[in-house]
Structures are given as C-alpha cells and as structure tokens.
Length: 163
Image 1: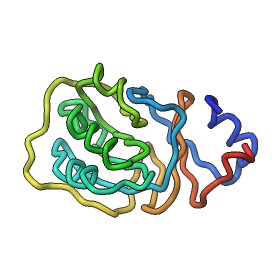
Image 2 (image 1 turned 180 degrees about the horizontal axis):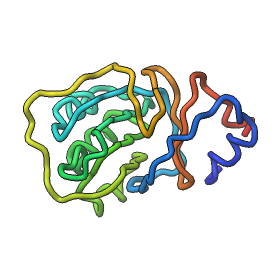
Image 3 (image 1 turned 90 degrees about the horizontal axis):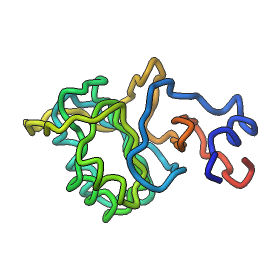
Image 4 (image 1 turned 60 degrees about the vertical axis):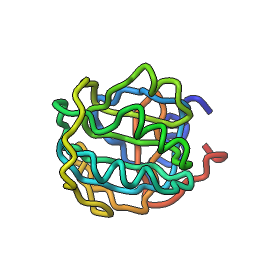
C-alpha cells in the first residue's frame, strides 16, 4: 500500500492522469487520497485557511498557487487546522513553510517547494473552480491519489483494494 500510484496505474491506466510536477512530500501519511476540493490563489492563502477550517470529511484540497515559490500558502497552523478538521491531504502547486512541524502531522501534504515567508491575506482567491495544474485540467469532485511516487487524478473513485 505504500506504493499506491504504481499499483493504481498498473490496474487503471486509462482512468488516471499523472500531474507531472516535481512534488515534494512534507506530511504524513503516505499514501493518501480523497475527493478534490479546489482553490486558485496567488501568494494569498485566505481561501486555503477558510476551507481547511471547515470539516474535510476525508477530502483533499488542491491549491493552484501559480507555481509561486515566493510565499508559503500552507504553514503549521493552517495544516494543524486541516488535520483537526478531518482533511486527508493538501496539495500545493506552490510553496509551504514550517516543514519540521508539517512532517509530524497526520495529514498528507505535497508542494513544489519551501519558503519561510507567509502570505499577506487580502481575501483573494477562487474556490470550486476548474484548475490547470502542470497542463492537466482538474475539476472539483474528481479524486486525487498521492504517494512518494507522485500525484494523480481520476474522474471516478478507484478501488484501492483492486490496485
């Protein structure tokens, strides 16, 4: 089960799409998966904080941060809120911070990189929108699967036991 993505791609090659980016793994556990909730924001994590403070019910927040590594869209306090609210994971197409603490949480976390600078919250960003991550269009309500091998999405929930 630790290498979920290779098994899923072997079993469901036509149902999965890889998000081809240089993802770094910061949280635990790995692997993780869940229904996708989307956010598009650039160097402002207002919407990320708002969503992760709500019940996650095993979902994964996918954040299109425009691949910016100038401001961290997730840090220890927001990640702890996500963990406490039952989110399965957070994928940041951008940067995170407080990585020593992130690694101790029971929350799957992947991002492109790390920066120690927080965002200025200006209330900007869009939720529940179609995202383009690394050239892949992703809709809210799809499913995301992540492990140490990468990140993939599917329109339908795949049978993990069938992998």
